[in-house]
Length: 358
Ligand code: NAI
Ligand code: MG
Image (cartoon, rainbow, N blue to C red):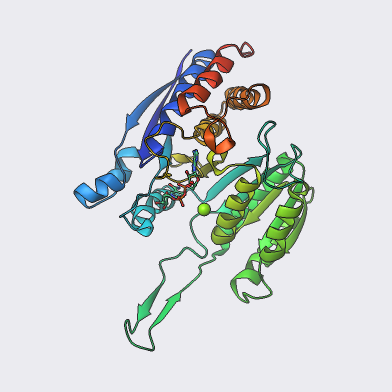
């Protein structure tokens, strides 16, 4: 029996268009072994579209992809278009309208990928759970007296009980399924309303999950500890801003931003979830065929997990980890000379020769 999925593809800008075809090729290859087929709808939503038509996506854009099974996104952003336009014109509306309140970023130090952090060995295997729709990234606030000496700006952080509880439940559940260890990022010594509230809700969540050992760390001390000893972490949960910073930091610890994946999840599955590599459009290397496709391929593996095919996701993970562990084929960001296609070809070969599916 074949299961068919409809995937919305948003390559976006720059290397986004170079890393999505490898991810789709991998999905097709692993799908063949597991009775899954993928129909892709390609959407040209991007800064290029913004420059020619004045909007990152059509007015009814979200309606058009509302019923797809998942969204794969490359990267958006291009010189000449302010980053807040690409972010608020595309990514943030998708995350918010589709209630993708979990941003999940697994971080592993892979064999064959040296980390800039000396102590980061293959014991590093952690996941950052970032709150993705409220918190510090709010539109509430404003600017007054522009151009006068008393010019000012105010921006409100918004923390709601249901918003914090659901991300904590997701993080504690994830910890329970892993090693039962969770760290909450806070700053309640300096931020005196929202962060103590966050801490209280963490304590309550801790009572709902008696098998998870949790502690809280102030964000400043926490980032230092991640750099000094990343292997001691399992699940880290943070607000929108803290989670954003933590996940890029942790991705850098793993060796290259080009390999890090992210999932924007609507855990209730009322709306499609979106999978996107952590990296941006990399204008400095775009068009050269040397972008590392691994972040996007890892996203495809996360998408398979989310769609209920963890064994297919694991095959993808095994295929790219074994290319790194057993060959010296690397794109330039990892110190090699291979192109996007060379690396992808080896991953596809690994999948074709992989374990027969059960
Ligand atoms: P970037 O991630 O695009 O690039 C940072 C550095 O990492 C560059 O030197 C780039 O060549 C390298 N790099 C990134 N991904 C790579 C890959 N797959 N393979 C090899 N090397 C890779 O971040 P940057 O330069 O700050 O931003 C460029 C544009 O991308 C901006 O417009 C920014 O707003 C946008 N951006 C979009 C994101 C998204 O779509 N979620 C996330 C981050 C940035
Ligand atoms: Mg970020």
